[in-house]
Length: 142
Image 1 (cartoon, one colour):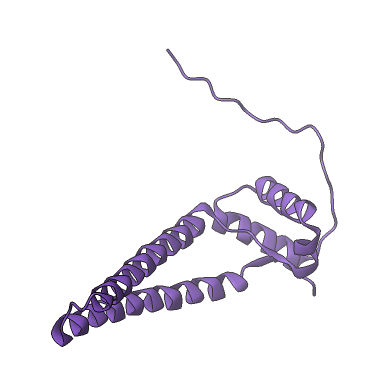
Image 2: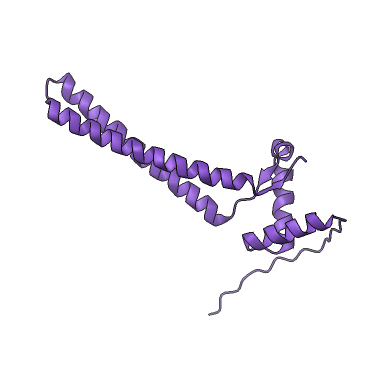
């Protein structure tokens, strides 16, 4: 049996006068995101209409790939953070009970340092990703 897909139809049409630069920017950004100009402009209108504070600041339209990459990195941070805290807790637990020698504590601290370094590496990568998104603002205050 064939699966039927619903086609959205919009009856209302907007017309706007824009500069050549604004027209090129809309076309280029829509192409970059793999959207039609209409889809792109609907996303922009909804984003601004849904959040008055965002409209004052300017906003960024994130494509699904960027969102998945940022989400994956945040989850990875959470895992590394939890593992680092678990290692620190095991050191405290052992020391509170009079167990654990200097070599064991040192190896646990090395493990914690490695995990924290991985979290910091991810933080730097995400900071770079976010900085690159700043240049892709689609609603600005200029």
